[in-house]
Image (cartoon, rainbow, N blue to C red; front, side, top):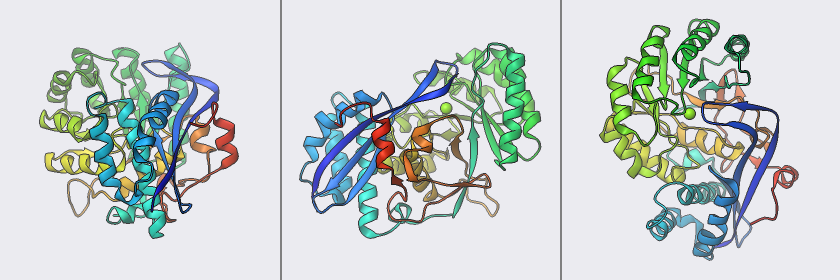
Length: 382
Ligand code: MG
């Protein structure tokens, strides 16, 4: 089998209603899908996190020529080849995201070739369903009182859809964040886990101050309390609080995560499959996490392609720690507006009764809708 073409599709979808989090405002969603096609007509899909046109250029100009004519079933070899060729200037960020997209597409091809769902190529699934957690509670009002009303309604909506966990955005300042966390905790009701995510809006002192205020609300994890560059800050926050600490959506490869684990900076590692180096690298990160005694729960913020890749990866991972009654593995279910998640695939990952259904069709188990791909493409294919 030979790789014939690698095509990058930078995509963009305008939003009906912009929303904000602690760092910036979204008025559109963007991502890069990558299609790898073989000479005998098999096609696999991958996705890269990050600035769409920039990542697409990295795929088109740098990686695609390297892989032309190579056998897609040699995906482990190809991963190391791509990483070695870009190591001197691409250890993190855009270049690794581009590798991630190609890697996911190669796994999709391999599984389609075998006629099996991708998780079986990873050694099998521990489950048919993975409990989802609803990611939402973004900011669209300046007035915290209005936000409290919005957050209450939102929590009730997720509860009605049987999500057993939900994650709210924080980063508006300790007092407001504590009030909004209490609001969601109350509205979510008993038996529903609540997490908070600062998207690194705090320094260590601020994060500890917020953590102490929300400790009574049974917060299941505090995500990205401080900058991903401030590992000392992570360690300080983790030691000071009784709330588990999560992070890693801005980290890359096993080398980056190994540092997080050795420093004991997180309780939950959150690799993004479309950024961290793809499925190949995510499996290695998960192995390191298991050695370090750290939970893994993938960051999922992309299109239907990245979502499916995360589900297959996570289905193949055991619960941690092993137990007769293990803690639920929780997978992120982005509930914000994103047509690239909800419209790009004619057949997408299903969420049923608050649980993500592990796809059973060959490969990623989803199908890209050509008309939607055309509609969201930002220009010429790359
Ligand atoms: Mg996050």
